Length: 115
Length: 114
Image (cartoon, rainbow over all chains, first blue to last red; front, side, top):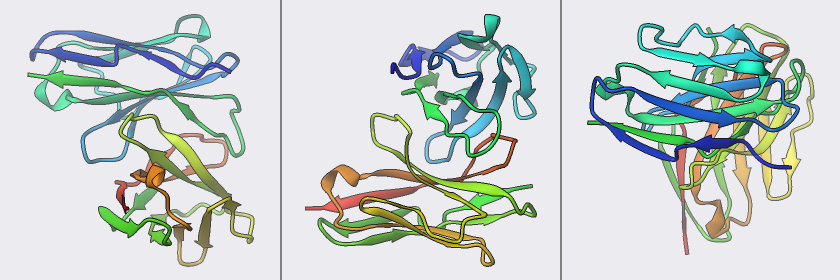
């Protein structure tokens, strides 16, 4: 099966500019996650969708970050305006099950550099 | 709040030898799952092995095995017969039954010396 697709792989912007990342999960996977991974740290969950509804966005900086998952498939994560501390890799993951030992499959990530 | 701690920022091992990566976690839950993920320079997070907390038997996947000590809240990964392709960042992760959010540790960078 095809994996989790993400684009772009790399993005360089200046602070206060905006950026958007796109994720296409594995077909049939109901749950989609966006993680932020700052260099040298473990990934941190930003937002979790179940179909097109938000399950957890407690760590999403809502004043500048937004995410949507229209029609319960693709998702877009937007940052506006970007800050220097937003420089990170943004990982998208998806999973099939909503309970039990649910295994996440990750995409290759989008690396953001804010200058 | 659930936390995962990896106390070894970096580890190195000679090719073909055995290495153990440490992980401890903090939780008040009784039903949960633990994972080890590998992240090579390509950044793709790959599942290495998983353990269900209700299972006493330690999980094994080929050269990878875990030592799960539930009372001590410890979950170490042993890699036997290390290969050059094992070089990567390794992350320990935790999730609760039904919640599905993975909580990650800080990672351990593993270097394999030829």
